[in-house]
Image (tube, rainbow, N blue to C red; front, side, top):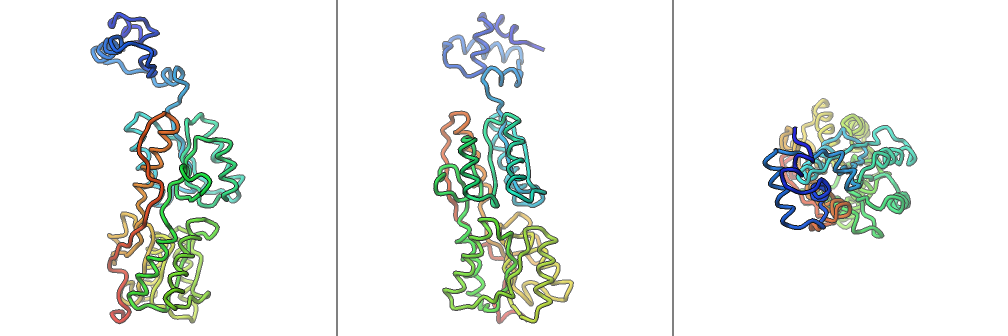
Length: 337
């Protein structure tokens, strides 16, 4: 296996010149750079990543903090970010706050990444307060927030307009003639869930439709929580013809749970989800959902962390608009049984 000394000898330059070339140091001449590149190619030399990071004082590692890896939403985020980093020979370390109950426990997950010398951190943090996020950014400036809106750190936040997403969902159900509508929310201590729910209620109110409190249940974002919330709704004596769920996992759980009670989504009750994950169009019936452009959001957030950490000048877009994806799980009221 070729060494840096072998490259230097073949190129006719010093070892220090090869080292500066590998670290991206612009102080070497174009001629020397060409000789080093040619020698590396001839010897099939691959630089040692650890040695290179010591030389450049960069680990070439980006940390990713998410609340959980259990859902399709964050898996898609991870896949997109990892792909973008790999294109630029960067790597990823993961942390999640699946079992965290307090802000202190959530921040401890962030400390895990900081202690591993990540050059920068991408953080999806719907449950931490604006105050806590501002403190984190002050302590660790090379950080970018995904799925959060922070006016004071606008250039470091990448998020969809969840308020609009909620309004689009309500608008669709109203246009289909529904007035008796139930909701399974996400975790209401999270900014995205709050914005989505507020938009939904505001659109109903602007259409003159009253939302009954007894038809609102918190379902979190998991299948089990969604199923349990749907069961609670069905046990009540308040009828409804349409159901809006805070994410697609909850909506799929609702469709399955209602079917056990002899209720068919798209035939007896209209059901609409949120996020529009890949699986949504393959459920039975195919599921209407609010499409969140998660790949675009994740890609742009990744570009920004590369800009902050490595001096790149990649273009970025911070704010994104959701769209309605209409499928078979929602129907006009008069077409329901």
